[in-house]
Length: 260
Length: 262
Image 1 (tube, chains in turn blue, orange):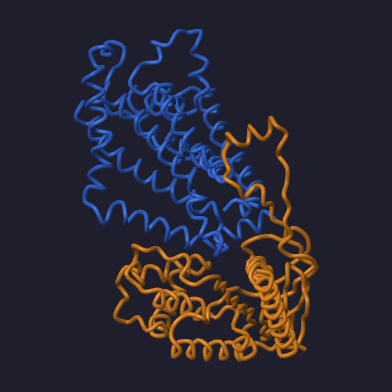
Image 2: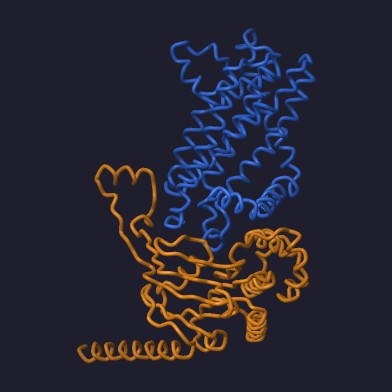
């Protein structure tokens, strides 16, 4: 019964989500030429810089270093952008929620979807780069949407949790800024995992983002199908986080009115 | 026998004032360690009940801070009551503070669709009503102008036109007819009365007592979250007017006494 009510509400405000996405999309891409260009160039520039700095250092241990780099960068950037924007999404629009019955999570959803579209745009240079660098074509390459989808589900879950708590704790934004900065280094984007001493490696193994990045690299660059255990763990992380996000948001949204 | 459109049953609404202060994680931990996580309860509404049949209109009167807007928001479903139940039948067009929910950088056209979507209407649904909205709001020349360049009167007209052209079963109007010039106000009043004829239920808040008497059949007088009087619009409004005059007279007397002492 309650489930149906939530679903009904979601369907009722689906046009709103569409309008929101349309609006954000227009702001980002239609109205500025640099919007599109930047989305494509940003990961390329990052990969270029990091390749210049680190390629001599890691050349032997990492094959196709620029793609290794860009693939990690894509997923991490998507996660950080989406969650950071979602964190403030509810209380930034408090004036709307004081006057309209719009479900608060819609802003969160639209942020995640816009970031996801950016991710898709940004993955174009990765494909082009793979072509230029002569990465051998193989069938496992077709599996590469899988880790991206899992990352999407995981990000959505995190975004909902952050959006809910962001209403109660306004300083969470600054704290989260530091956290994401640390995440940049705790996720192997520009270095191989081998440089981390074995006794500390469990910290990295806890990082779901690293898991998705690893699956993306294995399928896309290194022609390996990830083993069952990795896949199950990766799926569990994503689904459980989303479930937790929905639960937390549902629990907390009744208390929002005191804070907005 | 008309069917029930809105039913408010023993509604209580509590706000937690202490939590309305600046919220931060840091403060939360400090308060937790100190054992300071107290509640400062404020009851905005206490034991409010009333019922409206389809096609009826009710005016809510009361001084500032008496709980009128809170009650309207509860009926609109923006908040949930702490205790009690609220039953509504059909679609609701909440007109709570006009001009809210507009995106400054978007044009009037885009805002109509966005605003409609905020009320849960699809683009197609709004497309059918688009011309009607623009004509009523008298904004034909400004359809593609960003609304940040609109005057407050233009925004109010647009908001009113959107909310009343979607033919909701219940219209909630909070201080909306006080905007615009006299001619437009007249136009709004005409539209409200034609909505009433169509069977729309209207909840109306205004500090202009004459406008309440003109628009509504019933009235509810709230003071400090409690119902003082509920019934025929004339009786309630006359009693309320008398109360206001009494208050003014008393305030004057107190002032006079103070002046005497000085």
